[in-house]
Image (tube, rainbow, N blue to C red; front, top):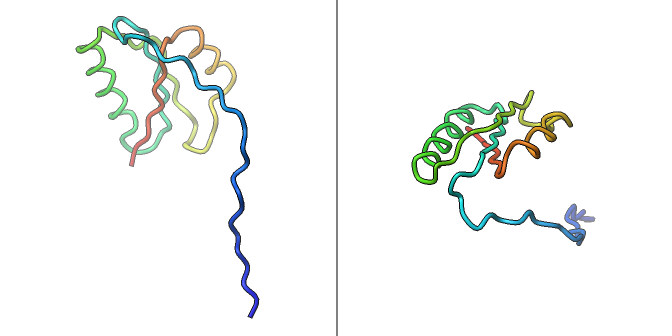
Length: 92
């Protein structure tokens, strides 16, 4: 009997992680809704909690065409220029 092992080793690569803000107070929040069920509800509740606790405001919202689609370049530019912090929501 011949068995096939479909696993492979992970490819190592350098990943640059974005700088984390020292405080959340007064930051502008960007939201990315991936269109899954309840994603928008989760994001709005989180945004409301961040507003109450840290004075954050939602400055830009982006809704993807579907969970598998990427955000288009214009959406990425808007998030980069208008938000200090971005939360990408999931649902289900």
